[in-house]
Image (cartoon, rainbow, N blue to C red):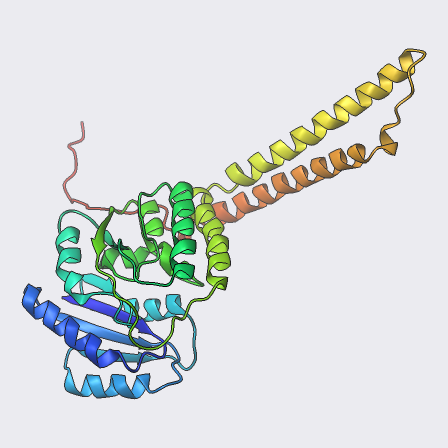
Length: 322
């Protein structure tokens, strides 16, 4: 079973054509049984009535409706929770993703991968969407150490077990490959076709870039330091305390030297702004160290209920004991 999850917001004009293209792509690719889950994320147009009409005519289509707009991550989570397939594919509802790419995604997934992400190699979007996206993807590659060209492409394929271990909230949906890789799942990327928007308007503005950078900091912390927060906070604390201590040492040394040798103008540390900056750094460093210890206590006390590993396969056979 292949489950195709489609989050949408005010896409009434594209839904019928999208479902028709998906059906055609599945049948022509001989991909087997499938279902389509259309998740209405609080649309204010006729999207829900269109979904109801589609579900009445297409047996494999199912509709989910939110009372209000909760965001794409929430819509995807709702679709994932109700997906029955062992393979889950996500795509946008604006007809910019090409359903004919389904076979290529699934073939790549069956080649030994757990997540396959689409790459809009030739992107048909305005420049004010393409250029910030290129910069963001480049920075994301550097920080996450993942060689993906397009983290935010909506066209992706997953094995169902991946989505059982990755928890989405906020705007974390664009980082699913990163979160999956941190759990040990194998991630790949393929180039996919991209079309210009035919109906409706884009749901993303300039604020998405700023939110993306904030989410990037969260993802880096979760993937690298979630179970060892002191390694980050403690290092910051040691650096701040060390730098502040060095400044204090030089100021005090200068004060001693100018008092011991006549003819030198005496230096009074408390009259210099650098003295208070050094004290500030030292105190901030102590706070980082203390916060890191508290975070370690939280992790240690909750470790029994936290999944810290991911099992790929298991056998009941045991090695003989001597």
